[in-house]
Picture 1 (cartoon, rainbow, N blue to C red):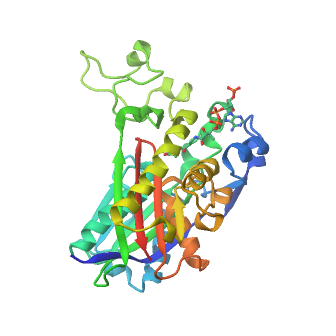
Picture 2 (tube, rainbow, N blue to C red; picture 1 turned 135 degrees about the vertical axis):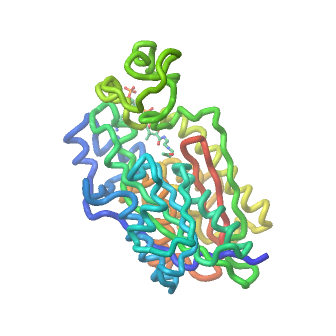
Picture 3 (cartoon, helix red, strand yellow; picture 1 turned 45 degrees about the horizontal axis):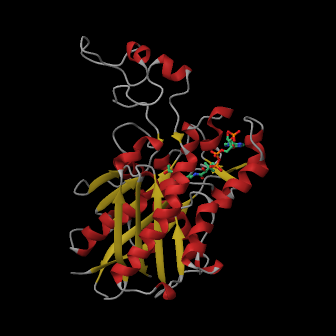
Length: 356
Ligand code: ACO
């Protein structure tokens, strides 16, 4: 069996910088609260009705393709992770193929809906395909256009202030070099708490979740007598049900347990020592979560990367954006031991250990 490597990495963040003070103008929040609870100072928002998670993913992909020294025609498989796709269906994978002008149809495109852990799930899938020799140049993208689906009233402030837009991309290739590349990946899930962090509607659910009542069902959910239903009702729009919902403290408390667990699992299973860790790149969910993980694992400041201060939480994009910046900045070099870890909605979580 071959190993697989990240042969090229890229990222794209939109131009528009949204500071905490900009959010203060539309909701009851404060720069002080946001910085103290999350570490976030600013985030980027894509250009409305021009940019999407697909277009931003394409810009990141172009950089990754260039850095890998390949051509777009060499891509033989696409994986796209996002929770903010352009359409309900089809998924961003095929839209990215079109956006990049990849016309060969022999290739496949797969969409991943694993939210914050989407990039790590995608990396694990790409690793399996590359190692077995099935594909030679897999394009993995994580991209988010959160700003098109957030509640900018005070009602949505706990969720809205943490998210930002952007995309990251990687080219995964098989390699003959032993001891290098993706050493191990670990994926986990627990559906028990699916609704603790969720974007429920529009969806084909039957109204069993939280705010839905018998009255809502009369608004268009399917019942015994009618044959069909609708994804979106006026009542959902009026009551702000079409936004993400999060029980922040519950998610936080679970995250600070699962992050260290899954990171240590990667070291234990791979036989590598955490003493040799060059850099931990955690999903950028909240600076306080990263600081907790750093303390728990006894890592020095230079062993953990945090860029949430300037981008917010970009969900599936946060890890590849951070890797790309670290490579650009010369923080990661060939031979370094790098650990990736994520936790988020689902709950799903995972880790990957890479010998760069
Ligand atoms: N501005 C001002 N006040 C606020 C804001 C805000 N933006 N948001 C909430 N508050 C208020 C609340 O209303 C509450 O007020 P009350 O005490 O009067 O009721 C108070 O602040 C505390 O609210 P909490 O929700 O308990 O605040 P907390 O300290 O937990 O911070 C946060 C909220 C930042 C969301 C935190 O819980 C968190 O980061 N959770 C984890 C997020 C995460 O990791 N998500 C996973 C990845 S995302 C994904 O998978 C898609």
